[in-house]
Image 1: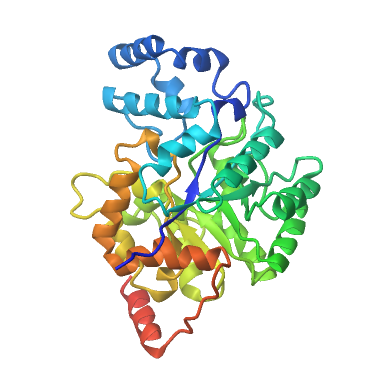
Image 2: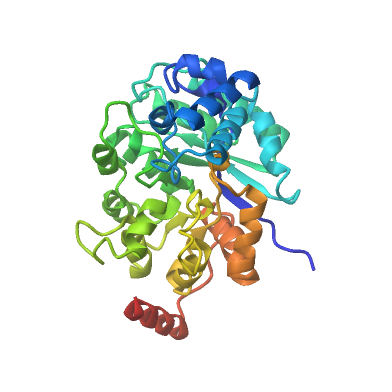
Length: 390
């Protein structure tokens, strides 16, 4: 029996030349290009702890930030650097595509980091998009490029129109942690077009990741908070909108450990997104599990994050709106590789839930199919029972 095509809904192929000149520091970029120099840095950091704060500052990972840097974690940082320093997006894409079946499709998310306060990139954002457009043309069945929209970019709407209408781009990516709110007027104008033309939107939605220089962690969280999207989703009810990372592993831990209330201002981002999905008020809202499912749960816990996801997906409103994504190559900083996590997810979730998340839901998110699942009475009973239990 032929299995459904897998969609990885969240990867990156931008290279170090697309990063701002001061992110990470120039001297570190040069050193990390030299294998011998990388080895020395790893030795010094492990032997004397001299680079602990430096690495945590320049690589604010979803899961590793704040963790103890050991030989193992530093080697993963090295793997992350080496991948990002490839000469082209094509080389990075070749690395990830080899870990999946040949028919796999990938949503590729560029990054516009020119306005984060760390200088201009060596290679302009337009050049990054041009290169991605060429890569898509060479791999039309595999690559689904999105357009990264920063409302501070001059001529944003014209560039968006060009790449969506004429260069094969299929969606929009926003990254509010870089210093803007998702309801910025320029973005609201884009959302209106996206809803009209069936163009999906994906937003970074976790406290971790990159943020504008000078912002405190709390300030960056204020830009990216999931509650910011409620009025947007109400204004554009037919717009497929994904809040990536399902809140992030930090918020999963706050929820699992009981450190956050079930509702109110202090509720975890996971809880807020779950409530939005379960409520049925936002039928075109999606979330993805990128990076979060690559993080290791505490060893004392008798279940994994994949097991917890399976419990959450017992609610039909959640099950139909979770997307598979990995956040390659950001997850090169974690222990497990793409293939290992995908196999583990398939094993933990079972065939039906896995392909719901990795095939059916992505096709709906991308407007490739129209969802055909009016909620049945059985679904409602399951949803109500699940809501009561949690």
